[in-house]
Amino acid sequence: MALTPTLLLDVRDRARGCAAGLLILAMSACATTANRATTPTAEAGVVGSYTGYFVFDSEQFRSTLQLRSSAPGRVAGAFRVSQPIEIEGVASGMVIDDLLRITVTWRSPDGCAGTIEGILSITEHGNAIDGPIAVSDCGAPVAGRMTFFRSDRIPETPAWVVRSDKAR
Image (tube, rainbow, N blue to C red; front, side, top):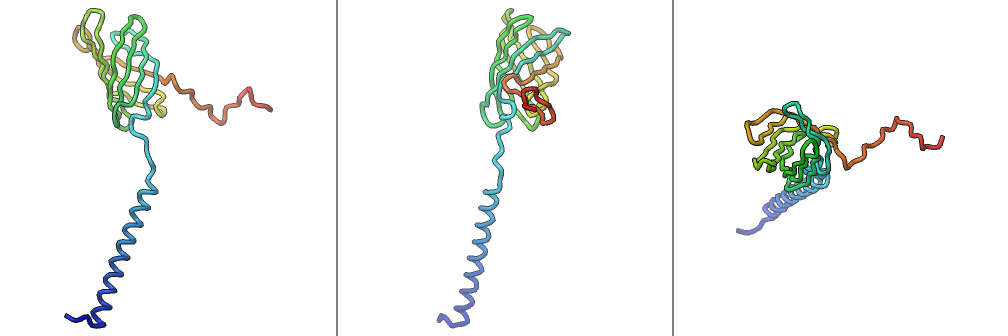
């Protein structure tokens, strides 16, 4: 088959159209990648140190919770009760949106395996976590509540607050 001027122009037009299409596709892919914001992983908002308490059977247990990232969307760390008894445990959890599904395990002074499980709300950009829990320790699970506040972050002072150290 011989290339005639008409067939040659037809091939060039198709090649230009194909090249233009590929160029547009490549540019849009680059623009999409360049404009995509890098978002922190879900657990980043709750990684840190917290102080607070959990309550069950009408008794309040003063506690600390330290969380670190263990995998994307997951946290792990240490849990410690300081009053009215001392218990040290291991915390693990999964963060989904503004919820922390947490499990804390420990060995009680009586030798029983203890467990706290709950789904806590993450509020104030990770400065507070709170929610219902179930506590098991040498007996049937008991309902309770866990409340923790960030202890390793100083809250920002709102712009409307007049600071006493500011020159007037």
